[in-house]
Each structure stands twice: as C-alpha cells, then as structure tokens.
Image 1 (cartoon, rainbow, N blue to C red):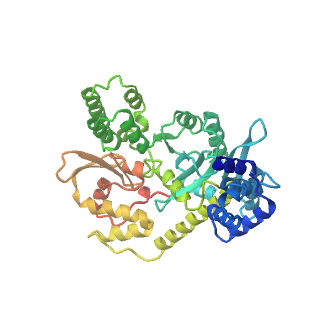
Image 2: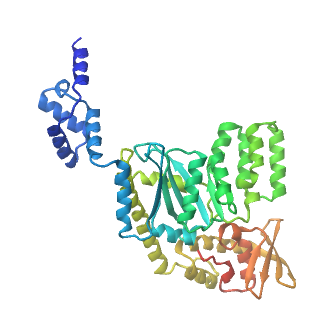
Length: 446
C-alpha cells in the first residue's frame, strides 16, 4: 500500500525545477551521467521516493532546454549556413511536409564535390537507422578512392524510404554534382531503390549487394547444397554458359523450378551474377558493406540521442577525421619506396611510381602470379597483335590483344574493365614482350 502511494506521489510531482535543472547541468558538465545525478538527488533528499521526479523527467527537461528558443530544424539549417562561410562549395536542400515540418534533408560540401568528380564513376548508397534520435533513415553516398578507401560524396536524412523520397534525393544529388552520371551503382535489393536508380541513372549498371543476396538466400532457401552453388554463380569466375549450366542443374536438383525467390533472382541475374557483370567497372565494390562499415565507425562520433543540429556537427567531425586519414595515405604514397619483392624489378619499380601504395600492393600480387602465364600462340592482325595465353596446369586459355600504335591492351577476362588493374594474363604478355613499364592505356586517371 505504501509503495503504491509513493509511486502515485512520484507520478503526480514530475517537474524538474529551474534550480534543479541548473544543478543537473553543472553536474553533467563535470562528466556525471544522469543515473548518477539522480542518485545524488536521492542522497540529498534522503531517499529515491522523495526526490519529486524520475530519471526520465531529467532527460525530458534536458531535451526541453536544448530546444528552447529555436526549433531543432532551424538550428540545424543555421549550422549548415555557418559552414558555407568557410566552404563555398557547401550545398544543402530540404523539403517540408504539409505541416511545414522538416521532412528530408540532403547536404554535401566542397570536398565531396571534388571527390565525386574524380571517383564518382562508382557510387554506393545504403540506408541505416539509429544514428539520430528520430530513428530516421540516414543515407550515405560513398565510393572508392585511389587508396581503396571509402570516400563520402554526400549524406541525407529521410523521413521515410518511399520511392518518392529516393527520387527526390537522387535527383538532388545529381543536381549537386553538376549532372555527372555514375557508371555503376550498387545498392541492396530494395525494389523501390531499383526503380529509382533506373530512372535517375539510366546509363548506370545497377548491381545488387552480394552480402544482402547471400543473407536472403539463406533465409528464403536455406539448403546448404543450393547455397554453395548460388555462391559459385554469384562470385565464381564463370563464363555465361557455365553459369547457365550450374544454375539450371542446381535448381533442378533441389526442385526449385517454381520457387518465387529463385525465379525472381534468375530474372535479375544481370544485377548480381559475376558472369553477367564482367566488364562493368565497380572498382572492386561488390557489397554495400563499405556503407555499413562506415555506419559502424559513425558510432564513435555520433550517439542515438543527438538531435539534428548535434548530429550534423558531429558528422562533420567524422568527415574531417576520414579526410585526415586520406592525407596520411597520400603522404605514405608520395614518400619512400616499397621494397622490391619480385624478380621483375623494373616493372615493379615502375608500378611503385604510378600507383598509390595500396593499389601497388594489389598490382604486385598480380605480378607475382604472372610467372604462371605462358603465351601459347601469337597472331598478327591488321590493327593489333593477338596473344593466346594459358595458366600453368589449366586447360582454359584467354585472349590478350595489343594495339601497338596506341599501346593499348585488353584481355578476354575483362578484369581491367571490371576492376581497373591489369590482369594476370595482360601482365604475362608484358613480361613476354620484355616491357619495363606499364602502358598508359591501362593506368586509370583515378
């Protein structure tokens, strides 16, 4: 009976007075958490029941004070305005609902414009929740830079993930980037996203995130035998006819001919099958995991309780942190020479001068495997020299063409077109021709 009266008293006197709030703020500035502050009030009053308010009343009072005098949205937009004073490339746009409340917000800065101009040929974006107190989707546009690191092109907070919201966002993103279209876009398997990408980026190849596909396959199908074959079709270095044979046999073996998800996936094969995507440039981007990893790192800078103004401020701190890391990587690539590890010293040393350190490490792995390549035959054509090459102990062969006049190379494996680095077959021909430098035609500007 006494406990009931005490609970009723606590509920009927939930008010944090001005003096109490001043004391709470002073204690918070000293680093104390709200539960600790509440215990201090309990010690002062003799017991918890006589404090006169509860822990959540403290949170409510702090939040009310935080918003006093100006709305959260107005404060956030004012903050973006102050950033333009030091960054003339700062860009932001927002939309409001029928009640004139902030609905969607997109922003990017001058560095993002520059990065997109150089690295915007590949664009990935994904939505996450929980990084702001309103639980609204946070959308981060990102890509891959010359250090194979994630680079941020822009950000948005949406009120919902409807098709209309994404159309508004992507068109605004394109406007902010002066209309430059991406060659490739990678997202999750959301149907609204697919429709929007085809509308706003009609010339881009839309790829579905392999991580989401594997997760969905496990949930929808779950048979280990089929999942193993699905992974091979997804990631394997297959030709189109090999893909068709493996897919057809696996579907028949498990009786999945009429399975809705299997039928849907086969219809979308050009958006996820490695055999069908080969030749489309994605700079090694296969999943939206870079977006998700970026969201995890955000947790070090941004907490769920932040309002919009605080979120924007701390997000800018995070971008500054990322860009300082890029400067460090630039410095490491510009100064010092890596130790030569292969017997092909001349071409390895040349690669170290034209590639960033991270890309050079990837090229050196290819260079180490080039000794397994042998030239089977050579045929001089009117416009090029055609080489048939094979790998050690493998019966399959590949074609490498060399246009002597333009010093351009291409390979039937299309790894150069897909990833941006010369493939093993191409490097094997360079070694066969005793070249000591990588042709300019196979070194990307990015």
